[in-house]
Structures are given as structure tokens and as C-alpha cells.
Amino acid sequence: MASEKLVLAVIRAARPTFRNQNDKIAFAVHSSFLTSGYVLTATGPQALSDNAFSDPSNDEVSVDHWNELNDEYAFVYANPEKGSEKVLVKCLVMNDKLLVHAFTQGSSEPLSLEIDVGDYAGEDGVSNYSQQFKNLDKLVKKIDGDILSKLDGSAKASSSSRSSETSNRTRQEIPDPVAGFGEPGGPPTQFIFPSVPIGSGSDLVPGPAAGVFPSRGGHGIGGSMLVGPNDPRWFGGVGGIGGDPAFPGGLP
Image (cartoon, rainbow, N blue to C red):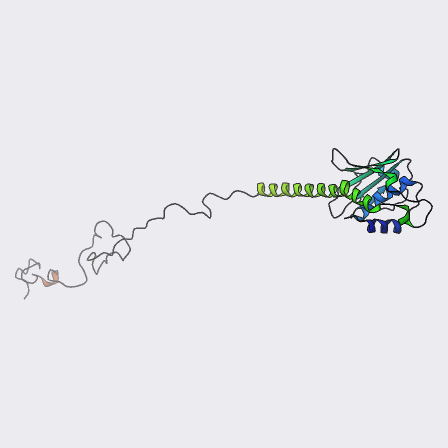
């Protein structure tokens, strides 16, 4: 933020030569921009050229030739801390007033300030710069309130708009989640576990293991590895049951 002490320090460091009262006020405007973090990229006739805005260079230039124009002053600034947009400041002499207009890139209307030169220009012909101004504190506050603070607010709004556009583009580029992915599914799958078969199969062809459905029908293979009463090797069987026809009585 510009202040009287900072502005006067810039003026003393630059040690400009003032031709008239208008020069003093125009240079006070310039010094207020410098103390607010702006960098001078063009001044005088160069600042009014067609490529003053389009020139991509933000290199700082000297203040030479700043008051070469008659009844008019021009400065082009860039603020590295607030983006690459430039500001063109024109000061026009209108009778006993200095009309200040600040144009930003892409703006439709300038910020304007009307300064009564006699209220702020001090004595002529003195070497002390503080005596060449009066009410400098009031002038600096006027420049800050009507132009600098508004430029700062405009830069913040522009930066916020760009951030919002970037955020919107990012959201548009992120695909929507696949339906069902990461979300609870439908009703849980029901599993039917087969019962443990009891008494099915034989020791020759065992039945199905636990957890396996039994097959339909038999295996086409009868008997077992154990000798029972109906086994043919008993010939007639035990008690006349089974056996071979050649031994109707069976074996005891």
C-alpha cells in the first residue's frame, strides 16, 4: 500500500527535474504505483505506442523521457505479483486540473481520478523535495483509494475467475464413477450347501464327499470288497440265501 513516506522516498531516489506544477503531481502518481509493487515497462512516447500492451516483455525501464510530451504523461506498468496484465496510466492536463486514467488489458472503462494541482503542488525552485509538495499524504490516499485499491480488487477478481474456470475444467475432465463401483451392491448372493450324504454309495465306489451333490442314478457297478452272506463264494449262501445252483444246500 502506498504511503506518503514511501512515495517521497521514491521521488528523492529518482531526483526528477520538474518543469512545472503538473510535473510534480504526475510524478507523485508514478511514485505511488512503484510503492504499490508495480514495475515501469514503458513511459513517455513509448508508452503510447500501439504495442505498449501487447509487448510480452515485463522488463523494467528507466523513467527517462517521462515528461517529454506536452500537457500529457503516460506510463505502462506490470505487477509481477498480480499476474502479467499491464496497466496504462495517462495523465492529461486540463486547465488547473490533472485528469488521471488507468486502463487495464481487456477493460471496457478506465479508472479515473481528477486532481486539483494547486491543492498539492508546493514551492518551485527549492532543492528539498518535501517542500515541492503539500498535502502529499492526502494526495497519496486519494490515488490509492480511487485507482490502486480498485486495480488490486480487479486483479483478485480476475485471478479468482481464472481459478474457477480451471476448477470447472478439471471437474469436467474427471470421468463419472462407474455405476456400482465402490457402492453397495444388490441383495447378497445366496449359497446352497449340499447336505452330507448318509448311507449312499459303497466301499467299492464311495458316495460323494461332503459338500457335493450326489449324482443321479447308480454307477452301474454293484457289490463291494467285503464278503457278505449273499456273496457267490459262499455257493449256496448262508442259510440257503444266495449261492450257486450247483450247491443248492449251500455251505454250512
